[in-house]
Length: 148
Image (cartoon, rainbow, N blue to C red; front, side, top):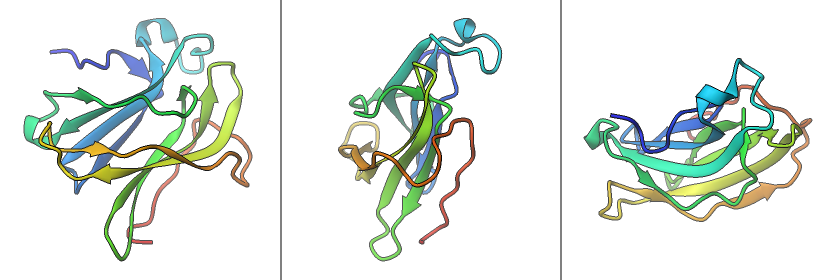
């Protein structure tokens, strides 16, 4: 069975709610036309967001609202968990845009409680900064320290 979000490369994926939810977002759609690594310029960049609950084993996916950040690939996505209230934030950092430029903006959305439709969702995306102090970049690594 094929995933409804279709073939893609250079996308973001994070596990949330203790591994009970999986979020897939962005990237270059249709890996068959993306070519070899680095050959994605001029392709169909995405800002869609998809949720799967671990109970389904990844067999069921639900498309969430499109993110307001510009479609991108080669970005980083991490989950930050608050120390006091244990809320989770999905954070998107930088990436490569469809015009070939790189970004250093940062966006976040809260992970919401189960809403009865496949176990959960995320809240409204908000831009944390338009330009972080690090140089614009793509195809990099990032990590979030637990409870920091």
